[in-house]
Image (cartoon, rainbow, N blue to C red; front, top):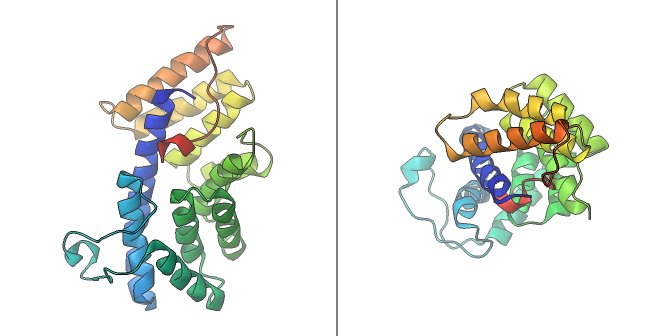
Length: 233
C-alpha cells in the first residue's frame, strides 16, 4: 500500500472516531454508565492522534465531554476491564461493544476487535460501525490482509444502510482493487470523493488512487493498492 493510502486511512479513522465519540458520551450519560466508560472514550480520543497504547494523562477541561471529568489515574487496561464488566451485565449494548472494538483496534489487537464487533452485530445486526469495524479487523487478522467473504458482504450491507459511510466506501474500494475489479474500485472511490473536503490531503490521495485504478482498468501496470487502513493508525 502507498504512503498516500496510509495518510488517507489515518485521516478517515480520526474522522470516524470523532463522529463516534460525541454520541457515545451522550448516550452513556443518559444510560448511567460508570466513570470507566467515559475514561475509555477519552483514551481513544488521545490514542488516535498520539498513537500511544500505554498510560495516559488527561489534559484539557472536562467541559469538552459535557462536564464529565474522568479519573486521571486509570490505565487503558483498567478502563477496558470496566467496560467489559458492564458489557457482561448488558450484552445487548451494541454501542458499548463498538466502543470496545474501536479501543482494541487502536491497540492493534485485531482479533479482539473483531470479536467485540461481532458481539455488537449480535446485539444490533444493522449497526454500520460494527459492520465496517468487523470487516477491517478481519482483514488485519488475515495474513494476506484481503477483504473478502463476510467482510466484503458486511461492507456492501453497510453502504446499503448508510450510503455516505466514508470508511465503508474506502474499504470497499480497496476490496474491489484487491479483486482486480479496478473499474468498480474507481467508481466506489468516486462516490467517496464528494463527501471529502476537496482541498484536503485525503481528497487528493483518493483522487490519486482513482487515477491508479482507472489506469489498471485500462491495462496499466502500476503497483495495485494492497491491504486495509491499518497503517493509518
